Amino acid sequence: MTAKSAREDWKKYWAELATSMEQASNVGDIRKLYQLIRRVSADTLEPWLHEVIGQVWRDEAVPDGWGSNILVAVNRKGDKARCENYHSISLIDFAAVLLRRF
Image (cartoon, rainbow, N blue to C red; front, top):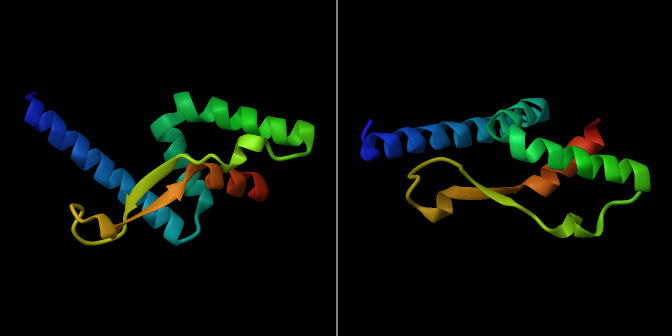
């Protein structure tokens, strides 16, 4: 595998991931979006998310740092090289949606 083919593989992977996330969020399928995020970053995101949700339940209050967001750019449609074709989702807001739903 050359560096160029590895780069192309990663570009393809992230493009497919962004498309899947966009499709899941467009239809309101939170469970599908959750499964996608879990598959991609289960080792890093899941323990943190579990800790935050557990803290919310124990303290019956939202943590002070809840306003800090991790933004992920998701391609809408069109040319992926143009900035205006992207929108962002906040993983913190996503966590709040999960907490509200379950």
